[in-house]
Image (cartoon, rainbow, N blue to C red; front, side):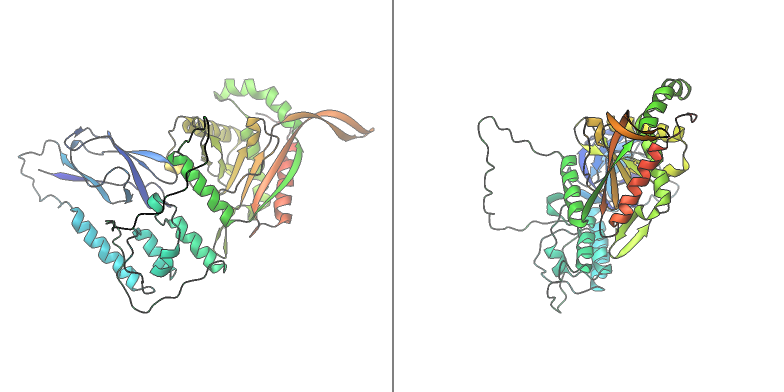
Length: 445
């Protein structure tokens, strides 16, 4: 009877592992082709894993909550219609879990043996093959790994944790511990066997009283919290502000929104207009479209603008408009509406939220005048647009200065002061405002 291995799918270039949230099928259940078998989560997005073939779920290789590397087998299916059949060629052997463990142990042991010697062999910490490979390439010993605080599941060290450690070590903010010269074994990267430990000291109870309610963070909120703390720890944030007169944009939209929706079948908000102005300004100041890798600055060729979107749950996600500078206003509008609708319906794919090089967040959507947003790592800048309000403003005319009612909006730009100085950050933000103020009220929609 032929068997088929269901593997953890690869969900993007930067994603090396995923957590099994919930199995939707039990051992012995019949599964149709393309039917969802389990739900998984990465630090980017939740997703479902369908079976490419019909069959019976013979064996689950992992349980709910387990973290599994991409391309690793997670289940074995017994294919339908193969009972009693004589295959014309021997079926490919199923790789049993012990064999997989042995192969990976050998690979990781070889990688670590070629790097700095490991110490503290008595550790029962889990390190994924990806983390161990980075440690080998960056000459991070096991003694140093032991000192890194993990933000992953059950305190595991993630790719982000070790890259942050390497970056901080290069900047001199951490120092490597003394390393003994005797090589030692490393923890098994797949099977984590807990060892008995002394009971931990009890945590102090939180201060609550009366009708206070304790609410545990959901998984996405925990990830957002970790990402925001990591960003503030990584980048020295500076925020600049400018006030823009967006009267022409408001008048143009009011004049064209009904005809635009009738012709294109899409509502046009201010977001596509803002994105067009941002993309133009990035082309003028390409060093704002960068990321940082240690002491290297990576100037991005593509202009991929993320737009922060609030979910019904109250959490936040940032889908990305790829190559925004190559699109006209109609194309940007369709992308914005599609991503926003799928975000609210929890239907975004991993690729939809990857590859961003700059982020835009509209705090004005909540009636806020301005904000000081946190940089979406590894980018170096994020811009916030405030609420558009009518205000009296001084205008210069050929007859002299006059006071007029104008539509005004504050823009704020948070940027990474390691690589973006005030001159660049301020000039870029002013250029965005200039493009907004110079919007042609007579342009075609």
